[in-house]
Length: 263
Image (cartoon, rainbow, N blue to C red; front, side, top):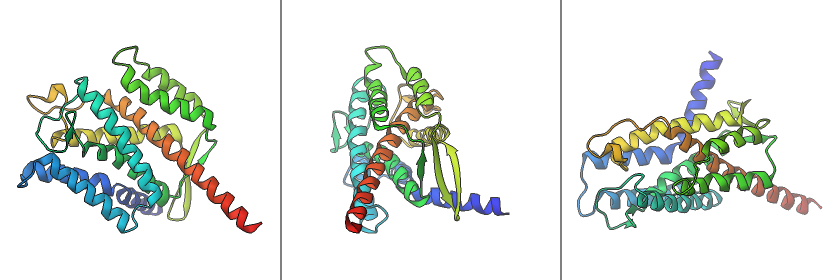
């Protein structure tokens, strides 16, 4: 019974942390079923995302520091979207005033929602990192993963090499988290795989409701290829590395400020 209760507690904390992604998926479903007046679907989705972001900040569900991280992910995701749409990897076929280079601005919030989940879960589950690699390893690795999303169109795709480097760099790393007052731990590489898999599941839901469209989904919706899990896995790692680095920098600054006040 205790294990079941802990599982329910963990699921509830995860659900609360996924509030932003849930709103996005609900909005995709509703606007697909019920056309809204005056503006296009993409424009309404952008307005909903902006209102959701404002509401989370106003109610304290997100802090100003977390908003800065989420905004960074919005920009990173939007840059990737513009490039991928230009290369024909996927498309946004509907019209809208809020489209830039063929990409609706609401799409950046789908990446930002991943950062929102990480920030929320980090705080709710009191996440701590054990044997975290040094800064000089983390930053180049995250940069190489992100750049590979662009360069593999012109050069060799090195995602599997990068995946191998991740296993080596994070071999001894663990993530500690708390549920109901009890501390648990998980290999950090496993957490990457789990998050990447569930984002792939979310991607299937999103494409079903017309968030975007892959070339093989032009005539009719079909399951997103399982190989996309590797892409989401790498993107999650970039997200996690950025959030973890910023959290550690922020924690170090807070510690130094507290030490200064004590002295």
